[in-house]
Image (cartoon, rainbow, N blue to C red; front, side, top):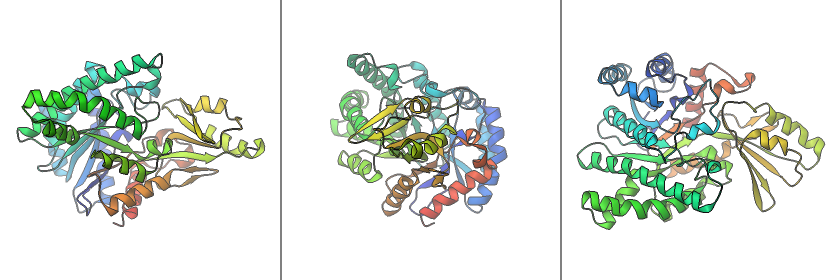
Length: 404
């Protein structure tokens, strides 16, 4: 839905299962009208669409696309952002690090992303910009043998990404919509914090993309660089940046220093807890984390020590080291409901959401806001509720934070 500052708020439909378009469309038909009635009964409702590769191939067909357009019109809805991070199955299967497969070193990731942008261009309302979030190039733990391997992956992935950039520039220059690819850092991704995003953007993307666009479109160096910054942006997932202990104000300040844009704000919360040194006091907290140890998604843990951090690739590895007396805090990658700030003895990083929404309300830094709690079906039983009610409650909570 459109907000007063001309930004748009929605939720990501990766919450709904269905890897074929027909299955996913049935989920949208079941839940979108109910959510809209609860949070945006009298205004058009925007959708943050997630399509698997299979669904994107099926929706690319003219018949399916026209049917979806007609449904959107009838329901007074529209699509303005998409989630292009998970390529394959995302529900009722073991996802874990496969969420990065295929990564940006492959032609499959390029073809999938271009296909998503073509669908988005066909669905976007006139005059509205569109964005698609994507993976941070690859999964860091696949490439740990040596620094030269990491550099080769970064360069190969960036060169692949230039094909998508060229398409976005060409579409916009020919009178089509302005669309941007939004890179989403996350723990153990090739980019997992602001510094790594800047290192990539300034050290790989701009040096490779600027001359590429100069050559392809006859642009000046300044104009080419500006096109890169227009079409390649950051996806700020609040959960992910809270996991690496970065404050929203610091992230925004560092991006502004380099005139880089945020394409999408993903509103999400992680689990956290301060860990007492005494084993008897620590045990209830560790046991509470065990309740969230499920086999579908990665739940990376970043632990804070005095002056440093310990990275665990998943919750089981952290649990094995639970008695480490040097660790003072855990933050775990588990997208818990944003409207709750505590889960028994555990807390959430909800305060980061409140801060970033205050900054957005004070001076909007993005047009796209998307709630992304996708773990409803793997939450402990006491936290589950009907999906449409859960989604509506999250969106209403965000609106309250924005004083709307």
